[in-house]
Every structure is written in structure tokens, then in C-alpha cells.
Length: 261
View 1: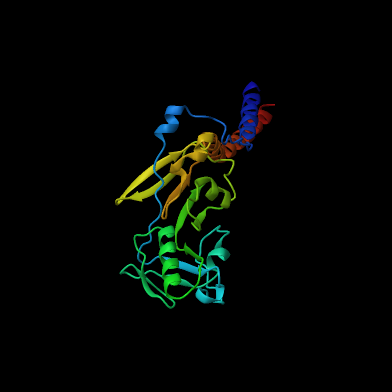
View 2 (view 1 turned 135 degrees about the vertical axis):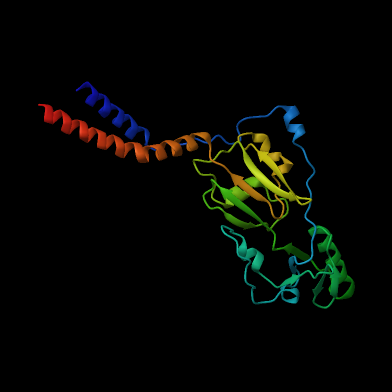
């Protein structure tokens, strides 16, 4: 009879251990030492326009001049809330020779320039040849990053402004899930045909000013599970076969006990 009680007790413990838990994430609280903060500093590299990039060019002084009145189709990307902004107006593709063909001024060499440099160049050409005091807005609308793992809405996201940060991207994705490991978020970047991995600790408030969190085209961000989530998942997998076995054993012991009475 003691064996029966013991088996029943074990069964109750296993069933209770399968209950879900609530993960309390700790963001932006811990402060790294000054030495650690200085060691993380890195230069912010502005994106330079490349062949095959898609440019949106608008004259804010006269929207009808460089902008098609019919909005173009947005570039697909999961979870992106800025498609409408990027899609307004006509777009132009950078050719293999690095030039982009624009209305009235023809081919302009833009490959190798930053967005700001290309904007000033195009603005100057329109002012010189055609327009009075143009205000040119230029966006590179094909840039994107990929966000995977423990976020509420993983997928591909467009980079529609300069210096988009990791925190901004996670915000667009709806935030981290309760199972996320906020202390070791990986940014995987292709650099010189090799993969460079940067690990960001979002529990450290200094991560908000860390230049490494500025995203670049083609980045892959991966948010892994935390240790408690992994333990819970392993325990749940263990319970999937332990619980039926315990139920069968309990039934057998009950039948055996009743048959001995």
C-alpha cells in the first residue's frame, strides 16, 4: 500500500511540474562598467548605395514633378508597419553601372554614395538644371533585415530610415516573448564573405547607446530561448511519456491491490 501511495505522490508532482511559468524579463536595468562600455564602441557605418538598389526620389516642393500620382506596390516584408510610407511615389532602380535614370536630368552616378550624399547630389542637379529651391527626399526602399526566434512577430523587416536600432526593430515585431533570452541577442552580419556575430545584452541600459545595435542591410537577428524556457520545454517533453506510464502503472497497482483483498 505504501508503494501505491508513493506512486500516486510522484504522479501528482509530475503533473504539477508541467504547469506554465511566467518569465519576468529584465530590460535596461543592469549597468556595465565604464571599461566594458568603452570596449563596445564602434564606428557607425552608413549604408552606401549599390547597383540594383531601389530608390524613391521625391521633390517635397512639388510632389507631382518627381512622384507618380499612383502609388507603387510596396516591397513585401512581414511585420513591417512602414510599407505605406516607402510605397508613396515613383521608384527608380540603380543600374549595374551605378547610375539611376531620373526625370529631366537623366543618368546620375549614385553607387558608392550614402543616402545623404546622393540626396545632395540630386538636389544640386535639379537646382542647376530645372527647379528653383528643390527639397529632395531620397530613400533606399529595398533594404531589409530578418528577425527570428523569441519575438511576437518574426519575419523580414524593411529599413526605411537611417540608423535603425535593434530596439526599434524588436518594437516593430511586437516585443520579446516571455521565453526570450534578453541577455544574449545575436546580430549576424555578412562581412567580407564571412559571418560576424555580435551579442547584445538588453538587460544593460548601456545597450541603448551601443553603436553595434545599429542595423545594416542583410542583418539576421536571432533571439534565443532563456534557460528557464528550455528547462520547462524539456520537462514538458519528459512529461509527455512519463505521465502515460505513471497512469498505466497506477492502474496496474490499483488492480493488483484490489485483487489481493
